[in-house]
Structure formats: C-alpha cells, structure tokens
Image (cartoon, rainbow, N blue to C red):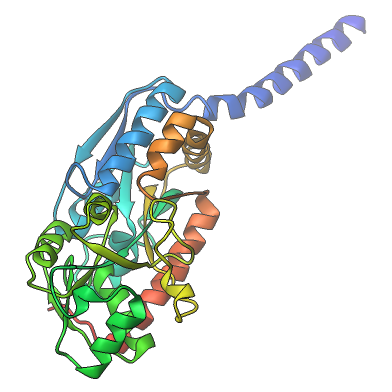
Length: 328
C-alpha cells in the first residue's frame, strides 16, 4: 500500500511539475532573433522608437532584435508583410497610428485588415504635433498665439495655407479638426512627408504646419515659431508652448502613437510576454530618457492599446466625414 501511495504521490508531483512548467515554457519566448518591421524610413520617430525598444529587448530577452525598414504607402507595405507572416511573435510591426487607424478609412483597396489581421501588443510612445509658423513670413508668422493665427484665417477665408505630410495624413486631419472647431478655413497643401512640408514652411510656400518633434531644434533656434501642441496637455520638450485644448478649444487631442503589433493568431502568452518585456523599458533611466525625447511615454498593454485604436478610428472617421476628405 505504501508503495502504491508513493507511486501515486510521485505521479501527482509529476503532474504538478508539468503544470508549473507550462507557463515557464510559454515565457521561454524568445528562442531566436526577433524582427521589427518598420514602415517608414530610418531616422524618424517611428524608426527611432523601434531601435530604442529593440536595443532594450535584446538586453532584456537575450536575443537580437533586428530592425528592418520597409517603406511605402504610408506604412501599408510593412503592415501587409507582417499580417502575412507566421504568428509566432518573431515578426513584429512597429507602426504609427495612421497605418492602423486612418488608412482603412481612406483607401478602398487594402491588402490587410487592420482590425482582423493584427493583435495589439503595446502602445509605446504618443507624439504630439506642433503647430508651427515661419516668423519670417508675414502676417501669420508675426503672430505669437494660436488665436492670433486663427483670427487672421477667419478674416480672410482660404487666403492662408497649411502644409501637411500628405493627403489623409494625421497632420491634415489635425488642421481640419482645428478649422472646424475655430470656424476657420485655411487651404490645404499636401507634401510627400513631414520633412518636405517643413522645408516648404521654412521656404515660405505655406503659412503654417503641424510638425513633429524634428522641428524642436529649429524652434529653439528661432527658425520656426511654435504656437501650440496637439496633445491634451503641454509637452515636456516645449513647456512654454500651450496645448490647443487650453487655448480656447477644449477637447482637442490628437497625437500619433508608435506601437507594436503582431499577426492576429499569435498565442496570447507570447503577446503578453512581449508586451511585458517592452513595458520594462521605463525601468531603465537611460532608455526612458531616450524615449521621452521622442514623445510622451504611454506603455499601454494589449487590451488598453486595442481600446485606444478603436477610439481613435471613430474620432478620425468623423473628422474625415466632416472635412469630406477622399482619396482616389
């Protein structure tokens, strides 16, 4: 009888050991290099965040993280590649919000379904846009406040222009939301990216633009003047620049995020393991400082990230409808 009890006890212990090691096996991810696919060129905010997080994960997880830039079609080429990859957690899309929230609202033919083809892993950084004017270009360049610019725009409907990073880009949506809230009408001029739009503003081709953090050095050097930021609160990099929401337009809140997504069928255990590893980046002061240079740190896990995507998609759909923005 004792031997039977001992055998039974041994069997139960073995089962408990297996049960205990199952989560550990899931947490054994990764066992080979991870590939970050970025839909935009090297050097911009999305790429910078990808490389900062990639370096952190290499150290944290003990596996290389390789960043690959697959540019084109506002991130759609990269998104398509990741959507069609193996759902094993080794191919990760590092995306901006437009690729996931705006593209599906504007393009009739999509090679991926943003809702069905991806599992959100982590929202990492939220980046405000900066409303900038050229101080060398009168009259808008001479104003020092957001309301001063809007008063000029309302006095001469359509006479002043703003540059965007492309038709349907969040920089256009931000300006159209502001136009609608203020009752102004500034003419849209689309460029092929944020860098050309900034060059156009510096060259006097347009009167204003919503720029990204790359404008900060030029703002501090006096080449551009910042009138407001699009986030709900002020941005730590420009503490003296008010938020649009505090400048007479409460509720204005648009930023572009940088987030990580994987193919939809990726096991939940892997999604969670990757999300938790990314979140530890803020525990390293050096990594945290580098991320803060890119925007506001927002380490949202899978559920909260998914909710943010849904919320923004609905918000942008309404802006697009009201502004009647259409792409052929």
